[in-house]
Image (cartoon, rainbow, N blue to C red; front, side, top):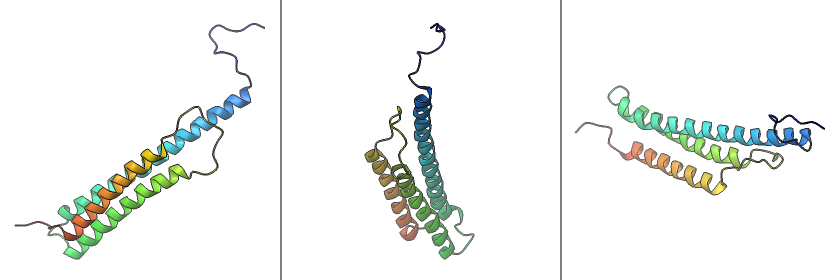
Length: 132
């Protein structure tokens, strides 16, 4: 048997290796989905906070309150959905070579982001809109 010096070490079974690589791709896809949920939540949080100052004097106070509340509540939903989607992604793939993000880290970071979102919501409800 002759092997090429430039080729990687021979694989035991190419089907097993393809399965392993597919499991790795699944982990990376789940992490991209998690990141998309967090990114959307951060955008909603920033929009909700910004709506209070941006809409000041343009629309009635109740509309500012409602718009900011909906956007910040949506951001809190996104942070929760990110953890849910990452932890309960469906049937597990074969054991990947790639390590997954630890669940405690996911829950801690997104729990903090949800706390920030709820604090922003309180600020929208009870904070001053502007003026003197």
